[in-house]
Length: 192
Image 1 (cartoon, one colour):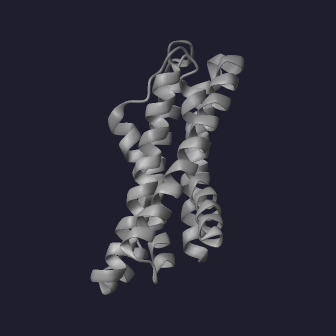
Image 2 (cartoon, one colour):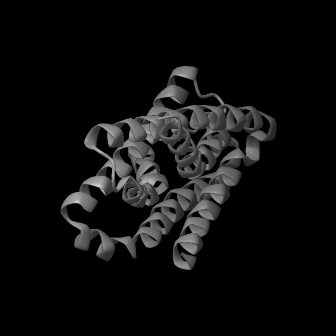
Image 3 (cartoon, one colour):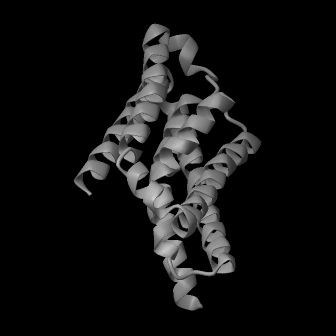
């Protein structure tokens, strides 16, 4: 049981790195973000990191042939979503640096797109749960979600701190970070 928890924690850290990076960018973009909003944003990322491996496990146990066909599109989907969100942040930051740097809020639809983009690779983590019972699968997904939430709150706080320090360039930097993450996920997916 200890090995199961340790494996789930390590998997959670690995899967949460993209969400952590996006959280940094979100904190940069909205340096006035409240603690409650930080918890909500981290919760959205954690929810997606819970749901995607569970969906992967379900696909593994029901529609395995479909999942293999879908797997080749995961890097493309993540790239598109993060380029869209990052590009939008970058353009807004360039359009009016002074206005965009103060209190630019990440909208709920943007958070949903970020959640999908950063967790879509977790779909394949469900394949790691091949021999797991439904209970163990839920426990592993819950551990992954908890790790994601903790890392994302940390990322938001770090981003928020530095966002207040670099004020006028925060949204531009946040957009560049999101674009970089999208390209990195894409390249990593293509290379295997």
